[in-house]
Amino acid sequence: MESFQAHERVMNILIRKIFNRELKPGDKLPPERQLAKDIHVDRASLRIALKNMEMMNVITIRHGDGIYVRDYMKGASIDFLRMLFLQTEKADGEWLEDSYIMDEIWEFWVMFLPEMLKFAAQRFTPRDIKTMIDIFDEELANLHDWNYLIELELKSQETIAEVGKNIVVILMTHTCRPLRKKMIELFYSSIDEESIKKHIETKKDLMRSCMTLDTRERLALIEQYREMLNSHRIAMRKLLFKDVDKKVTKLKKQR
Image (cartoon, rainbow, N blue to C red; front, top):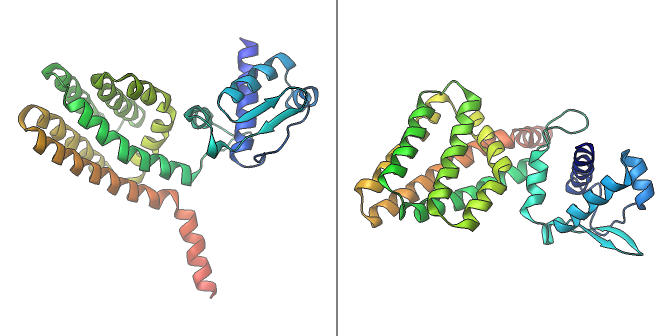
Protein backbone atom coordinates (compact mmCIF):
# COMPACT_ATOMS: atom_id res chain seq x y z
CA MET A 1 0.00 0.00 0.00
CA GLU A 2 2.88 2.35 0.87
CA SER A 3 4.53 1.72 -2.50
CA PHE A 4 1.22 2.48 -4.26
CA GLN A 5 0.86 5.79 -2.41
CA ALA A 6 4.50 6.66 -3.06
CA HIS A 7 4.39 6.13 -6.82
CA GLU A 8 1.17 8.16 -7.10
CA ARG A 9 2.85 10.99 -5.18
CA VAL A 10 5.74 10.89 -7.67
CA MET A 11 3.32 11.04 -10.59
CA ASN A 12 1.47 13.97 -9.01
CA ILE A 13 4.68 15.94 -8.57
CA LEU A 14 6.04 15.29 -12.07
CA ILE A 15 2.71 15.72 -13.90
CA ARG A 16 2.13 19.03 -12.13
CA LYS A 17 5.60 20.25 -13.15
CA ILE A 18 5.07 19.14 -16.75
CA PHE A 19 1.65 20.78 -16.92
CA ASN A 20 2.98 24.05 -15.47
CA ARG A 21 5.92 23.90 -17.91
CA GLU A 22 8.46 23.78 -15.10
CA LEU A 23 9.55 20.73 -17.07
CA LYS A 24 9.38 21.51 -20.78
CA PRO A 25 9.19 19.23 -23.83
CA GLY A 26 12.66 17.86 -24.52
CA ASP A 27 13.92 18.39 -20.96
CA LYS A 28 15.95 15.52 -19.57
CA LEU A 29 15.08 14.39 -16.05
CA PRO A 30 17.86 13.79 -13.52
CA PRO A 31 19.28 10.24 -13.28
CA GLU A 32 17.04 7.80 -11.46
CA ARG A 33 19.09 7.77 -8.24
CA GLN A 34 19.14 11.57 -8.03
CA LEU A 35 15.46 11.92 -8.96
CA ALA A 36 14.46 9.44 -6.23
CA LYS A 37 16.54 11.42 -3.74
CA ASP A 38 15.04 14.76 -4.83
CA ILE A 39 11.46 13.50 -4.47
CA HIS A 40 12.23 11.50 -1.28
CA VAL A 41 10.97 8.20 -2.62
CA ASP A 42 12.40 4.70 -3.08
CA ARG A 43 13.61 3.77 -6.55
CA ALA A 44 11.06 0.96 -6.96
CA SER A 45 8.18 3.43 -6.53
CA LEU A 46 9.90 5.88 -8.86
CA ARG A 47 10.20 3.23 -11.59
CA ILE A 48 6.48 2.38 -11.29
CA ALA A 49 5.58 6.07 -11.60
CA LEU A 50 7.83 6.62 -14.61
CA LYS A 51 6.49 3.52 -16.37
CA ASN A 52 2.90 4.74 -15.87
CA MET A 53 3.81 8.18 -17.18
CA GLU A 54 5.46 6.63 -20.22
CA MET A 55 2.19 4.78 -20.93
CA MET A 56 0.41 8.16 -20.80
CA ASN A 57 2.86 9.44 -23.46
CA VAL A 58 4.05 12.16 -21.10
CA ILE A 59 7.67 11.02 -20.97
CA THR A 60 10.01 8.86 -23.05
CA ILE A 61 12.40 6.42 -21.36
CA ARG A 62 15.47 5.85 -23.52
CA HIS A 63 17.45 3.00 -22.01
CA GLY A 64 21.10 3.90 -21.72
CA ASP A 65 20.33 7.56 -22.45
CA GLY A 66 17.79 8.93 -19.95
CA ILE A 67 14.25 10.09 -19.37
CA TYR A 68 12.87 12.91 -21.53
CA VAL A 69 9.74 15.02 -21.22
CA ARG A 70 7.31 14.82 -24.15
CA ASP A 71 4.93 17.53 -25.33
CA TYR A 72 1.65 16.49 -23.70
CA MET A 73 -0.28 18.56 -26.25
CA LYS A 74 0.98 16.26 -29.01
CA GLY A 75 0.50 12.81 -27.58
CA ALA A 76 -0.71 12.54 -23.99
CA SER A 77 -3.85 10.56 -23.19
CA ILE A 78 -6.88 11.87 -21.30
CA ASP A 79 -5.43 10.12 -18.22
CA PHE A 80 -2.96 13.01 -18.04
CA LEU A 81 -5.83 15.46 -17.44
CA ARG A 82 -7.52 12.97 -15.14
CA MET A 83 -4.42 12.80 -12.95
CA LEU A 84 -4.28 16.59 -12.82
CA PHE A 85 -7.82 16.92 -11.56
CA LEU A 86 -7.49 14.02 -9.13
CA GLN A 87 -4.93 16.15 -7.33
CA THR A 88 -6.87 18.14 -4.78
CA GLU A 89 -4.04 20.31 -3.59
CA LYS A 90 -0.67 21.63 -4.58
CA ALA A 91 2.28 21.47 -2.22
CA ASP A 92 1.39 24.91 -0.83
CA GLY A 93 -2.18 23.83 -0.09
CA GLU A 94 -3.87 25.77 -2.88
CA TRP A 95 -6.20 24.23 -5.44
CA LEU A 96 -4.60 23.23 -8.69
CA GLU A 97 -6.64 25.03 -11.35
CA ASP A 98 -6.17 26.35 -14.83
CA SER A 99 -8.91 28.62 -16.16
CA TYR A 100 -8.09 27.94 -19.79
CA ILE A 101 -8.20 24.16 -19.32
CA MET A 102 -11.55 24.42 -17.50
CA ASP A 103 -12.98 26.52 -20.33
CA GLU A 104 -11.79 23.97 -22.89
CA ILE A 105 -13.38 21.17 -20.86
CA TRP A 106 -16.65 23.10 -20.94
CA GLU A 107 -16.28 23.56 -24.69
CA PHE A 108 -15.82 19.81 -25.03
CA TRP A 109 -18.83 19.10 -22.79
CA VAL A 110 -21.11 21.46 -24.74
CA MET A 111 -20.20 19.45 -27.82
CA PHE A 112 -20.20 15.96 -26.24
CA LEU A 113 -23.17 15.82 -23.84
CA PRO A 114 -25.89 16.69 -26.41
CA GLU A 115 -24.45 14.11 -28.81
CA MET A 116 -24.49 11.55 -26.01
CA LEU A 117 -28.13 12.50 -25.35
CA LYS A 118 -29.05 12.05 -29.02
CA PHE A 119 -27.45 8.63 -28.98
CA ALA A 120 -29.13 7.54 -25.72
CA ALA A 121 -32.54 8.97 -26.72
CA GLN A 122 -32.85 6.20 -29.31
CA ARG A 123 -32.48 3.59 -26.57
CA PHE A 124 -34.34 5.05 -23.57
CA THR A 125 -36.98 2.72 -22.14
CA PRO A 126 -39.86 4.05 -19.98
CA ARG A 127 -38.00 2.69 -16.94
CA ASP A 128 -34.80 4.55 -17.95
CA ILE A 129 -36.77 7.78 -18.31
CA LYS A 130 -38.34 7.28 -14.87
CA THR A 131 -34.87 6.70 -13.39
CA MET A 132 -33.63 9.96 -14.90
CA ILE A 133 -36.68 11.97 -13.77
CA ASP A 134 -36.30 10.53 -10.25
CA ILE A 135 -32.71 11.82 -10.21
CA PHE A 136 -33.84 15.27 -11.33
CA ASP A 137 -36.60 15.32 -8.68
CA GLU A 138 -33.99 14.42 -6.09
CA GLU A 139 -31.87 17.35 -7.31
CA LEU A 140 -34.81 19.75 -6.97
CA ALA A 141 -35.41 18.49 -3.43
CA ASN A 142 -31.77 19.11 -2.46
CA LEU A 143 -30.90 22.50 -3.95
CA HIS A 144 -29.24 23.55 -0.68
CA ASP A 145 -27.06 20.44 -0.39
CA TRP A 146 -24.14 21.41 -2.64
CA ASN A 147 -22.14 18.17 -2.46
CA TYR A 148 -25.15 15.89 -2.94
CA LEU A 149 -26.36 18.01 -5.84
CA ILE A 150 -23.01 17.61 -7.59
CA GLU A 151 -23.08 13.82 -7.08
CA LEU A 152 -26.60 13.66 -8.51
CA GLU A 153 -25.55 15.66 -11.57
CA LEU A 154 -22.65 13.26 -12.11
CA LYS A 155 -25.01 10.30 -11.66
CA SER A 156 -27.43 11.64 -14.29
CA GLN A 157 -24.61 12.08 -16.80
CA GLU A 158 -23.31 8.57 -16.16
CA THR A 159 -26.81 7.10 -16.46
CA ILE A 160 -27.16 8.69 -19.91
CA ALA A 161 -23.85 7.12 -20.94
CA GLU A 162 -24.91 3.69 -19.64
CA VAL A 163 -28.25 3.80 -21.48
CA GLY A 164 -26.39 4.36 -24.76
CA LYS A 165 -24.57 1.04 -24.19
CA ASN A 166 -21.51 2.19 -26.13
CA ILE A 167 -18.36 1.02 -24.37
CA VAL A 168 -16.22 3.93 -25.67
CA VAL A 169 -18.71 6.53 -24.40
CA ILE A 170 -19.11 4.73 -21.06
CA LEU A 171 -15.37 4.39 -20.40
CA MET A 172 -14.66 7.93 -21.57
CA THR A 173 -17.37 9.23 -19.21
CA HIS A 174 -15.81 7.32 -16.31
CA THR A 175 -12.31 8.50 -17.18
CA CYS A 176 -13.22 12.18 -17.18
CA ARG A 177 -15.24 12.06 -13.94
CA PRO A 178 -12.78 14.21 -11.94
CA LEU A 179 -12.86 16.79 -14.75
CA ARG A 180 -16.66 16.75 -14.88
CA LYS A 181 -16.90 17.10 -11.11
CA LYS A 182 -14.68 20.18 -11.10
CA MET A 183 -16.62 21.60 -14.04
CA ILE A 184 -19.95 21.14 -12.21
CA GLU A 185 -18.54 22.76 -9.06
CA LEU A 186 -17.51 25.82 -11.05
CA PHE A 187 -20.80 25.86 -12.95
CA TYR A 188 -22.95 25.87 -9.81
CA SER A 189 -20.76 28.55 -8.24
CA SER A 190 -21.29 30.81 -11.27
CA ILE A 191 -25.13 30.88 -11.13
CA ASP A 192 -27.80 31.48 -8.49
CA GLU A 193 -30.19 28.92 -7.02
CA GLU A 194 -33.05 29.94 -9.29
CA SER A 195 -30.86 29.33 -12.36
CA ILE A 196 -29.85 25.92 -11.01
CA LYS A 197 -33.53 25.07 -10.54
CA LYS A 198 -34.32 26.18 -14.10
CA HIS A 199 -31.43 24.08 -15.42
CA ILE A 200 -32.78 20.97 -13.66
CA GLU A 201 -36.34 21.59 -14.85
CA THR A 202 -35.07 21.93 -18.42
CA LYS A 203 -33.43 18.53 -18.08
CA LYS A 204 -36.72 17.07 -16.87
CA ASP A 205 -38.59 18.54 -19.84
CA LEU A 206 -35.98 17.13 -22.18
CA MET A 207 -36.33 13.69 -20.65
CA ARG A 208 -40.13 13.75 -20.88
CA SER A 209 -39.80 14.62 -24.57
CA CYS A 210 -38.26 11.21 -25.18
CA MET A 211 -41.72 9.77 -24.49
CA THR A 212 -43.90 12.26 -26.36
CA LEU A 213 -42.00 13.89 -29.24
CA ASP A 214 -40.96 12.43 -32.58
CA THR A 215 -37.28 12.15 -33.51
CA ARG A 216 -37.07 15.51 -35.31
CA GLU A 217 -38.70 17.43 -32.44
CA ARG A 218 -36.55 15.63 -29.88
CA LEU A 219 -33.33 16.50 -31.73
CA ALA A 220 -34.41 20.14 -31.96
CA LEU A 221 -34.98 20.22 -28.19
CA ILE A 222 -31.54 18.69 -27.56
CA GLU A 223 -29.99 21.46 -29.68
CA GLN A 224 -31.83 24.01 -27.52
CA TYR A 225 -30.27 22.32 -24.50
CA ARG A 226 -26.86 22.67 -26.15
CA GLU A 227 -27.47 26.41 -26.48
CA MET A 228 -28.37 26.57 -22.80
CA LEU A 229 -25.15 24.75 -21.89
CA ASN A 230 -23.22 27.22 -24.01
CA SER A 231 -24.85 30.16 -22.23
CA HIS A 232 -23.79 28.58 -18.92
CA ARG A 233 -20.26 28.31 -20.30
CA ILE A 234 -20.28 32.05 -21.00
CA ALA A 235 -21.48 32.74 -17.45
CA MET A 236 -18.78 30.49 -16.02
CA ARG A 237 -16.12 32.25 -18.09
CA LYS A 238 -16.82 35.43 -16.13
CA LEU A 239 -15.95 33.54 -12.97
CA LEU A 240 -12.90 31.81 -14.44
CA PHE A 241 -11.38 34.93 -15.96
CA LYS A 242 -12.40 37.60 -13.45
CA ASP A 243 -8.74 38.17 -12.48
CA VAL A 244 -7.83 38.63 -16.15
CA ASP A 245 -10.65 41.18 -16.52
CA LYS A 246 -9.33 43.11 -13.52
CA LYS A 247 -5.85 43.27 -15.05
CA VAL A 248 -7.24 44.47 -18.39
CA THR A 249 -9.30 47.15 -16.64
CA LYS A 250 -6.25 48.27 -14.68
CA LEU A 251 -4.17 48.54 -17.86
CA LYS A 252 -6.89 50.62 -19.56
CA LYS A 253 -6.93 53.05 -16.64
CA GLN A 254 -3.15 53.43 -16.83
CA ARG A 255 -3.29 54.53 -20.48
